[in-house]
Image: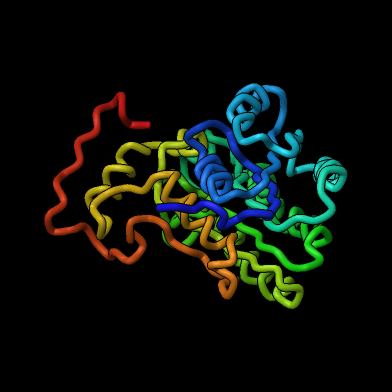
Length: 274
């Protein structure tokens, strides 16, 4: 499927690439293939060591250290971006974080400190990014964030992250209304489970992968490339009439109410439990 030229002349910021298995990387690859000019953020030297060599073949316009939990850091990021570009066509927000230990137990035991931190990084940071990106989109643009089905239904070991993602999805709707008057579209993708660095913090993740594979209508899981193609649709002019949407890219799992009749039992060894 040729994507050539679909994003030619478009400039955008990708926030959240961690490695080659990141959903953000799947999105960046699809956008690059379609002709977009990209800039990237990372957080700290450890991530820079991973991200820098990964994105160099894409000839990034900028590679900026950014801590989304710090307003000053966000200000600095967009100041650096303005030095490179006079305008921005799209932003991809693929950032979330919570204390891994507090994803293991009960949601009711979440601490106030972790709740506030999780909401700040995983939810409010998208609004904070939108506040700054809006000023660089005088002729309109598109903003995209990432969610998960745990925002809609209770999922094991997702806990406070599910609450944060539910708030994020609500933020998408409110931002879409606020910014639509300026021809800025705001959407989310609710991706099915994928083996990413972020997913490594979710207990029993291999079991969850198998459950989705056996019970989704397409009887498989999804790839970062497939999420990337969906993002390309939303960020390109093909999605020009779509805003406030939470697009499920999960092989249809979100429509299923119970275990499939033909689904085999899942056997996961102790070594596969995480």
